[in-house]
Image 1 (tube, rainbow over the protein chains, first blue to last red):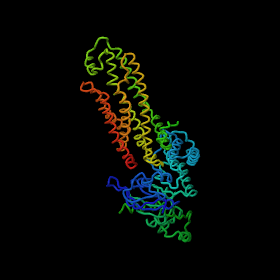
Image 2: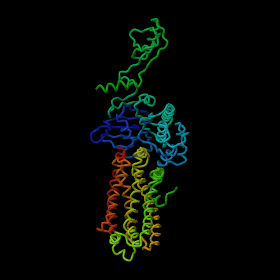
Image 3: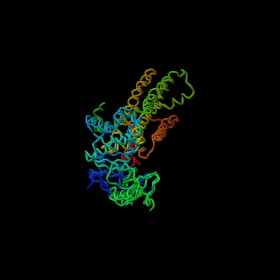
Image 4: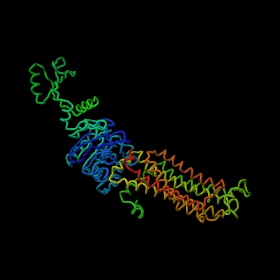
Amino acid sequence: MGAVTAQQLTKTYNGKTNALESVTFDVPEGGAFALLGGRDSGKSTLVRLLSGLLHPSRGTCSILQLDPFKQPEKVHRLCGVLLPSAKMYQTMTGQENLHFFGRAAGMRMDDLQTRSTELMKDLGIWEARGELVQTYSTSMRQRLSLARALLLRPRVLLLDEPDDGLDPEGTTAVFALLRGLRREEGVTLFVCTRQPRVAQRLCERFALLHSGRLTAMGSLSELSQAAGCVARARFHLALEDSLPGWQDKGRGYWEKEIQNPAQMPQLLREVIEAGHAVYEARLLRPSLEDAYVRLEEKEAGQ
Amino acid sequence: MNLPRPLRKLINPRETVVLKKDFREIWNSAGVRALLILLPLVFAGVIPIVFIVLSNLLPAQSFAGMDQLRALLGEAQSGMNDRQALFYLFSDCLGPMFFLLIPLLVSCIAAATSFLGERQHGTMETLFLTPLTTREIFKAKVIGCLVLSVLATLIAFLLFTVIMIVGDIQLGVTFFLANASWWVLLLLVAPGLILFGVLFMVVLNAHGTGVGESMQICGYVALPFILLFVAQFSGLFRLQSGGYLAIAAVIWVIDLFLWRSAARHFTTERLLR
């Protein structure tokens, strides 16, 4: 059984609106799974269900074999949760916030001191530790919230929009820390995001959530295949040159879809033999964003 | 700061952390702090002093309406001069009303800041993400508000007692605590009102009411209470220890229902709606 699971998980509000409908997935321990979806797709509802803040209308879910709704306090010991709506105390300093949440969780003061210092340094907010949170930038608040979620050295991380409001410096610090946690401590990552680039940087398996339903799930190559996205060859030629049968991308760039990356050397040879001067040749693999956009278009069309 | 021993037995160290945080949050809010200081100061300090001064400034000969006021006091006023009668009227009829507004309003303010404020600032959800159980959070917050309100009420009562003793001695009136009504007020009605204020705010919190709106509702709740005291001046009835006992009983029954409702409604599902 996986570290994060959902079986036919359904959440209905007011007995009418289905915020989540029969969602099923299984994330193994140490795995990294991203749930992609737009606004109101049900991502936050799913994170709240997994963290025991909401009760499922139907179906079940578990974190490390624990039922989050029946044993939320045990789940919160093992699982760090980052939710955009879960804020830090504005009238406390960053360090006071971490100390409060650590003490409320029963951490010993010396351990808490070491851990909070280490996290604030890793996330680049150590210098602002003594300042009130109300003076923090959005990026610093987000990093502080992540530090709070990581205080108890969780084995599972549920992250809803982890890049929300992050500046470039913050993004670098957060992503480095998360990747390091996965690599060195085997922390399981469950990421909900609107940004395919974020998902692709952090995870290896993905699911698409549309109006509360899972519409696709798999690795990048599986999703690309399902979306009909293929690799493309991109050549940069002289401005006045042209490649018949290729797509003109402007400023001397030409593209062509290829079924297999192994076709690339042959294609390059053919273009050069045909007398074209090739300044640059690139193999463009389909990104998660390509697959996501294509699959969302398909879903919207249905 | 360590909590007193009886409190330490009642709540675990993790709940104590939440309680201390709540104290700090309440005290750090300038508006709330001002209210918590001003309410007891005005109701238990300024108003009794004004009455002592007024009683002393009363003209030696009877003024119009004094006979009606004396009639309200019945037998108790026999043998008192007008100054003494006016001060006795305050300590017996109006003083209890002003004093009881303190536990009611202080508990409402403390609970509004602790429960509704936390929800409004989005920190209640963060608190629910800690390994604390919902029950522990509820308990820590309710106890915190109760302790704060009891402290404020006791300090106010101390201030009130000192001022009233000065008035009693100066005007030669019987010591106000010799009246059994005050003991019923202090030991039964005031604690009942404190619990009422806190639980009422928790129930409003569960129904998604904001801080400002809740304070307004709290004001409306105080209104019939004030009317009950003011209505004594119509001459229809006069509240005495028996009446206060009945009021205390009603308040404690309401508290019981509110307790059940508050505990049932304090769930993550309802509070994060």
